[in-house]
Image (cartoon, rainbow, N blue to C red):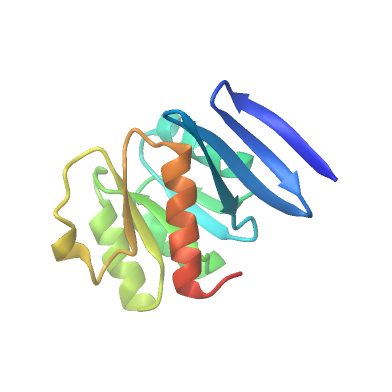
Length: 158
C-alpha cells in the first residue's frame, strides 16, 4: 500500500512498504530519500520560531522528538535524560551556546551524535571531533534528511 502526502509543489512524503520516503524536485530531476523514522532526537535553539519550524519538519518526516531546549545547558540536561540518537543544536545562543552544549555532551558521552545548526560560517575542521555534521540555516528538509541518513549510516541503523 502506498500513501502519499503533498507537502509543497516540489516536495512530498511517501509511505511504501511501511517505510517513509521524501520525494523532492531538484532542478528537473526527482530525488528520493528514505527517512530513518525510528530516530530519536532533541532540538536545541534559542529562537522559538526557528526551533518550532525545525521540530515540525522533523515530525513531518516521522522523527521522534524527545525534547526541546533553548541553550547549551538545556542540551546537556536533555541528553542525560533522554539519551537521543542525534542532538540538533544551534551554534549561536545567549548564555550557553551550542559549542558549550556540544562539549559538555561529549564529555558525558564521547559517542554522542551532534549536528550543529547555524546560519554563520563555520570552519568544520576545528569541530571534527565535536560534531557529526553541520546544517546551514535556512534549514532545508532535504539537507536535514540527508544529514539524518548520513549519521544513521555511521551508527549502522538500518
